[in-house]
Structure formats: C-alpha cells, structure tokens
Amino acid sequence: MQQLKTSNYPSNAFGRFWMKVPLVLRSILIGFGVSSLGVGIWTIVAMSLPGPWSVLLMATILIFFWMYFSGKWKPSNTQAFRRFCIRQINLKKPVWIWGLVAAFFIVLFLHSSWILTFRIVEFQPEIFKTLSFINDVPALQAWSAIIGISMVAGICEEVGYRGYLQKPLEQKYGPIVAISISSIIFIVIHLHQAWLVSILVPAFFISFMIGYLAYATNSLIPGIMAHVTFDIINVSYWWSDVMGTFERKPISVTGVDNHFIITVIVVLLSTLLFIIAIRKLLKLKDVALQQTIV
View (cartoon, rainbow, N blue to C red):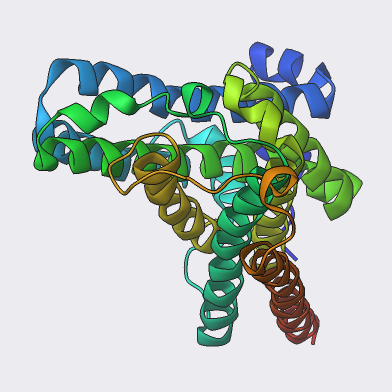
C-alpha cells in the first residue's frame, strides 16, 4: 500500500510549522487551494478569449496542472507528497474495466437521482438555469463553454478533493472517514449555488461514490472521467437548455406513473451495480497488496 512518511515533507521552517497544523485542516486547505487554482485560471482564460480558443488554451494549462501536481518539476522536497496525492496513473486492465463500469453507474445514478428528486419536488428552472446565457450563443461557442467548464471541474476538483484532500486522510483515518470529510467539504464549497439545496442528498451520495471509486482504484482517472461526463450533461441540460430542459411534473400533480417507477428502478439498479463494481475493485486491490507483500 502506498504510504507517505513524515520525512517526505519539507524540512524548512515553514514545513515544520505546516506540519503542526492538524492534518484535517491541512488537507482541506491544500485540497481547496489546488482545486481553486485551476478554476481561477479558467475564469480568467474564459473571460479573456472567445469560443474554442479559451478551451484549447485551458486544455494546455490543464496538462501542466496535471504534470505539476502529479510530482513533476521542483521543488523536489514536495515531489513525494505530490506523487502520493495524485494516486496511481498506470492502471492494470481489470482495474480500468471495473473502474469505468463504476464510473458509468455514477453518471447514471446522478441523472436518475436528479430526475427522481424533481418528480418528488417541483423543478425550479429559475434557480437551476445558472448558465442560461449559453443558450443564446452560437453552437460552437456554447459547446466550447460546456466542454471547458466540464474539463476544469472534473480534473481540478478531483485532483483537489479526492487527491490532495482525501488521500492523506485515508492513510490516517481510513477510507470511510476520509471520504466522508472530502464529500462534506465538496458540498460545503458548492453551497453558494442556490440549486444545491434541492439536490443536497443525492449530491452528497454522488460525491461519496466518486471518493470511494478513487479509494477502490487508488486512482483519480476513473472519477475524473465520470465527473467530466456528468458535468457535460449537467451544463448542457440542467444548467442551460442546450440539450433541452426538464418538463415532468411532480407526482403530487400527476400521481405515481410509469416514468416515476422506472426512474426509481434505475436509481436502485445503478446503486446496486456500482456497489458490485466497487466490491470487485476492492478485491483486485487486496490481491495487488498481497502480491507486493509476497
């Protein structure tokens, strides 16, 4: 199992002071800082360049973002910590397969649980459609914004929260506590969004599922792929009308219909199949650990 020794941290005066900060607070600050760095750069780029040019520039920046936070370049006294937090990059084929299966069911759970939520409570487009300005721009510019927002959120938030925040906590407190803390912080960071209140419960479970996927695979990559995928759908469907809008009435108006029953089944099945995929990944992880011990 990948471990990080205290000796891997910086030994200068600031490093010694930093190590006195409680691990939970230290991890939260670092995770938030890493994620916010990428999001902040994207905000500047998106405001400075039009259409696809902003996405192309940000894609280049994200390559350097990934390389640095995966342990490339100086300072050398933080390289071990950066490699530790980024988790594994080269995955074996079975881990890839089951990781992608689990990622698919996260995406399926997210959208089916949101649909289910808005069959129980009324969907309020005036709160959700925070990116409705995308509806009024040309298709190329709209999809550039959708892809750019999704790439930045998927990569930067996963590196920050499931990497730099969650990974050090796993080593000390175990996966459940670490994933719970990272999920709570992830939700808190998004509380300024008015739409979050109506989907608070499914949003927490989605965050927990991504965190557990990172733990089970010891990789951020499947979670990043899930995050980018569901954010493309989020931005184009839930937060704008590029791919349409939700028009179903709550069951308080329509009664329990076939659409509601099917949605419940999809939510339950996606949850069950995600758990099955995670159990398979945990078995693969145990086998790999035993092989390293032998």
